[in-house]
Image (cartoon, rainbow, N blue to C red; front, side, top):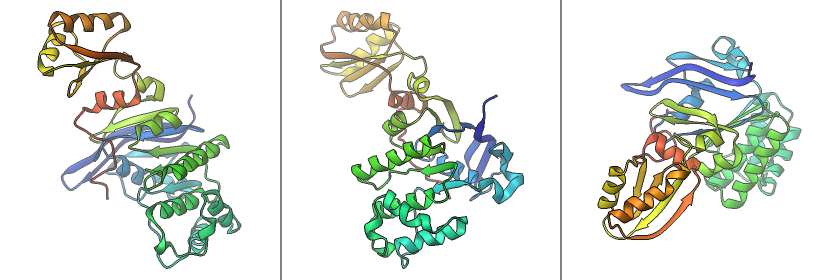
Length: 313
């Protein structure tokens, strides 16, 4: 039996007449790095807030370390480090005072605070007021407070938001380091390459429902695990799309004059043949393996864009 550190069953939440979360089931294994993906308004932040008891579900159950979080209350959330999407702190407190405040709330030793600020590269500003910090600096203080107390589960909502590439890389290294020491990392992101780079398992959320949950490699294979042939054509793409449809190719994405066709390896030549027989000018073509981004678009539709929740409270 799989050992889950976090599991949800039938989780639902509505705001007025909007059903933000519609029966979500998640399965996060101990020691995993788990990516939580979805377009704007998918319900990611709402789900995270329910897991943390920051908002109450209408129905459904949350299990943390095998215990029912609804029955255990605050005890279920002990040992969880949390970074919200938009970290906010008292502006008149310094960075070190902010960490001392959270260390007291968590019941962890204040001696950790300087170490955590050094770990995220904010030790030079330990005595500066948070109100003078940039968005990225505030985010780093948020990461430091999430690490206090050596959490067994880190829940990070858009953790690299506002960070420049150097600190984004440093944060990823921290996530990997914590995971290497046994901490389970659960994070949402609109950056698909981050999930593909860091995670072993992930789920894709759309319109409040999980459309797929699996290993990143299997999700990346898309609906049928097919690679794609990418063709750049000359002229109007409409005749090319019709020619492909007539030839039986139905999994097609179009971006201007670039057409991507998902096919089995044995059918690649058939794509070019169908276009040539229809007198379509082929300027260039290449074959690509399916990526997590392809899977994301194919599961939720090309008209959606990944990001944070619009309706989350």
